[in-house]
Image (cartoon, rainbow, N blue to C red; front, side, top):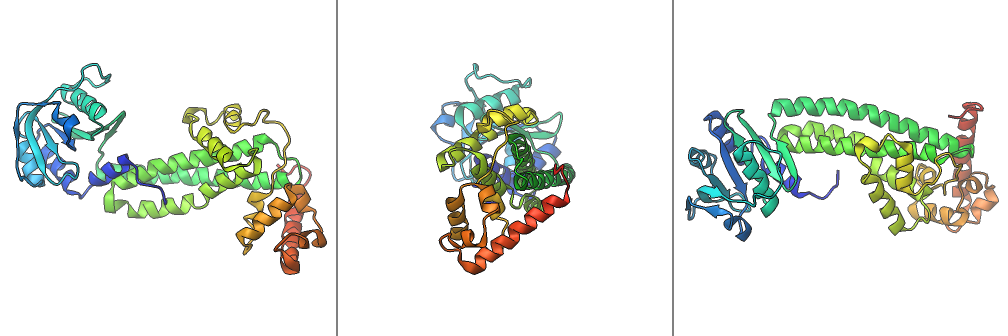
Length: 355
């Protein structure tokens, strides 16, 4: 998806099925043992450790970690998880750090993660389940079968939401051409864009958890998310004023901050984008529609937008008016005029109620 790797994603990759660390955790669960494993070291971890013993030149292997887990204390690995540094240690994190966990091992794991910033895995001997803690985050490491089933079900959900997004985008275009677009129609597009992006992030995380077995899910995910980030940016450029980069970034961040449970509230989403009245009629700059014109170079698009600054003026411009735009020329002016005429004809075909 072209997104920078987050600390959480890096940890998930390290714990994905088929990796040495995951093999070690599976061996511990098969033995019916519990474990507390700190995935990283440093002064912050050292000051919480008491008792146990330190290991020198002890490379990590799944068998060695599983054997050390037979003792009651925690195990500490280095930051690269290539060496085991401590075993059978007692961890003493700050007891004032809040936790909802009830078991002693899981409470300790959450507090150590919160205090040190290091990932900590707690293995429950009763439930035979491994749980990852990382600074305010908690994730159960599900089986590959469960993750694959969840991923496929989520892909079906994403496919439905992507269709709804495409419908909203097409409807907004018809309203723009008819010059009856409102902020509410823009909000619907942005709501669906954000929902699709959030569902995509969840699926991506599950695919990472699957390791190599998630390749097919990642391929389908990439196809369903194609163009969504670009659609978000182009729509923001069309309607957020002023359309400076700083203001666009601010609007995007405000939209991302809307809780998922409030994304269905048009007024809440409109407010995050700076739209005072969702029912207010509005005109776009024409950024998004111009990006759908085939084989139109980016500098030419920007020149047209800068020249007209109003989609309706652009839409009804004559060949001579289009030809006056720097870099257009008669051939591209004719291309644009034909494209705009097709948009107008298609909108008229929908009748008086273009919505």
